[in-house]
Image 1 (tube, rainbow, N blue to C red):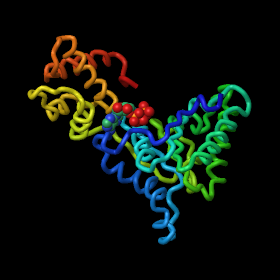
Image 2 (cartoon, helix red, strand yellow; image 1 turned 90 degrees about the vertical axis):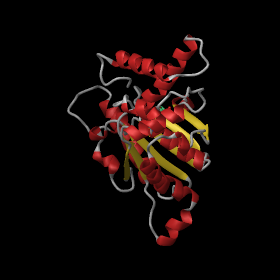
Image 3 (tube, protein in one colour; image 1 turned 60 degrees about the vertical axis):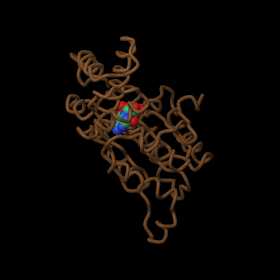
Length: 270
Ligand code: ATP
């Protein structure tokens, strides 16, 4: 039962090249997570401790999970993902036990990367709310803190987490020795949107009239996940029309479709 809540992948197939527009963020992740795994002697020689944990924060659908998977790919590490919401359990002690299992499994499978998505679900600031289960969530977080603190010689296990709600986090989780390296992952810029569109249409049969720079200008506010849907939708329009190539008009129709779908409920597609 414990493994069900975790997603375990040996060396996931996402690479840095699959990530559009996050060059600086990729460099930071390489420095903070990849280099300590692949060249630990460089840190030892200089006498500097690599970051204990890396927290990726920013709006949804911008590539945080991709970044974590790409490091695991690059380092041939086991990628172990756990959603923070999965750690919020009804039964006393269940959440803490899952946290223990998570770290235990990571140690067994090293080199490995633990990735806790939606960490805010377990590490939110304590509010005055009397929500039942609050105390239990607090216990789970305590267990997480204690695992991180007791993780002196972490060997080839690296810890990463992500959140869309940085403001909500309990600062205790950001202290030195815990998530002490923060990397902000922003919404894609116009250039990044063009790159993301190119990445997601790589295997598609694209007509000569398709202008990605132009599409990037017309998709302001779209995140990476939405641009991926846009590419798929454009392809669907071509198929519906019984064509073998995807044209600019298909992308425009797809933009319209996604924008219409998004109307009314913002933030869209989250
Ligand atoms: P969330 O906070 O909602 O979990 P996230 O930031 O972790 O989101 P991902 O899961 O990494 O987002 O991205 C979702 C999907 O969107 C990816 O599988 C990918 O197809 C696409 N995507 C998002 N960002 C990018 C990007 N920068 N480059 C290419 N594809 C992207």
